[in-house]
Image 1: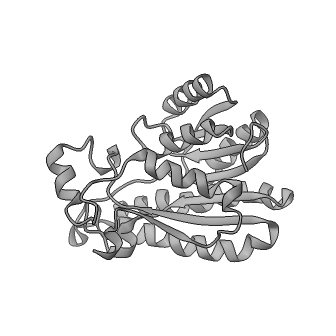
Image 2: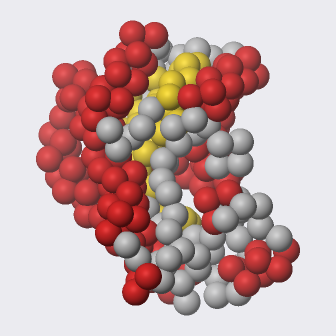
Length: 253
């Protein structure tokens, strides 16, 4: 499903050290036109300019609040006007929440679900309409091993619950849109060295976070990006409604 005549939208791709940025770069390397969406509009534009220049593909950066329907509509409309048809979507935008359950507030809970769950719904619904019309599409959303293990590495109940929602969302949507030639999958990373976990990880934090993994290390952004790129590719055409663990075996430890 690659090629400059097809666009991959990647949300949450404006952060220089994020999975979204790595996924956008990997997809551009594979020949996709790239739409970089991020709450940080300047970061999105800078990332798109850099990727487009380095990879030689059409690239567009757009600011968006994925939790706001009007913002999502405007952002995707801008992508549709400026790039080839959207064939791939990677829902990477997300926020963490390390707050213990008894200290969690309704406002914080709602914010986590607004970005992680409602944001995935809004962007996917907006993009999938065009995929259904063209009878072609790939959707990949980022869940987390926290959804399966009940947290345990950094974030707590709100984050784990919102990422569990992604798994159910993925399976149910795959059931609805499969007849239109669209695949829908999720990836469940374990600890990865990105800023979502409170900033750049020290060696001590890496050791603590990786202690329960079978491989005794944290993951890299590029490893998760490679899996996302595969699930958006032609080779993954017989895979749908799946959740791929990419967490060093943490899901069984």
